[in-house]
Amino acid sequence: MRYAVGQSFEVDLNAWITETEALNPLKDRDLFAQAKIGFVGRSVDWIEDELDLAADNLRNLAVEQSGGIGRERTRHWLHDTELRLEQAAEALGISRRMLIY
Image 1: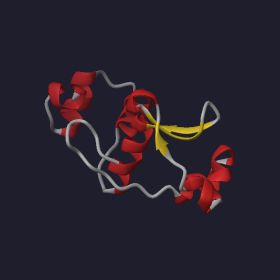
Image 2 (image 1 turned 120 degrees about the vertical axis):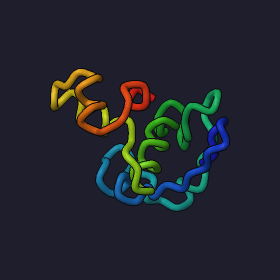
Image 3 (image 1 turned 90 degrees about the vertical axis):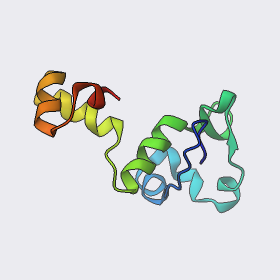
Image 4 (image 1 turned 60 degrees about the horizontal axis):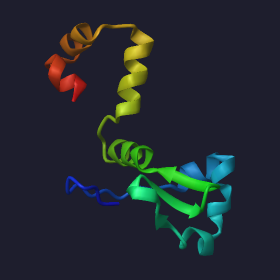
């Protein structure tokens, strides 16, 4: 997957396909091979209005699979700890601005 900012990721969907009932149809290699870019590049679509994955979710998964910390994990951590942005940034040893970015 390549993003407009020039980032490129590879993502392994095997676990998601196996563990998520809605994605189980993608076990069919012929269906999986029919992937196409969705409306304005915001998703990968297999069956229009029925089976797709949002580009943001795919990017988040790719970042985590490459050893990074995705946005969703950061949001959940902030929610779970109930830290303010300033407190969270201090705990991580980064600036508030970097945490927001």
